[in-house]
Image (cartoon, rainbow, N blue to C red; front, top):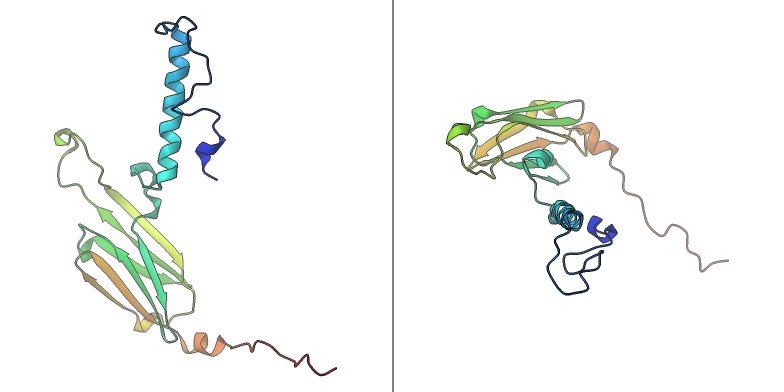
Length: 171
């Protein structure tokens, strides 16, 4: 259910009846009411799109985690950054990617911008214990790729559980 489904009014309908004589509404309270409805609709529409704004960029950078029998591979999209702008840490089963994206222009020169600038930090719990000493990182075309082999203990912990168990045909 979208948040806007909870709102009893919409852009195509009004919760307040219009003027019976068909003329324009000059009531300041009615105008305020309609403007407040529009503001809330616009705000809730942003929640529905899922697009990050500067204030909700907590999911930046975008990550992708892939696991195989031997390793964990994490890719992070970091457009406009160099490897010197990024720091990668692995500690106690948590991967931390942090850095800073600096603006190329002063705020006084900028008229409008949808780009995200400033410090960022993403922490993710690794799905398996990894061998931190053998971890490798590459940075190419704005994509950071981390390859971390699973530790021997993590490979030993994985145990296949058979499905089906007992044969139910014999009673």
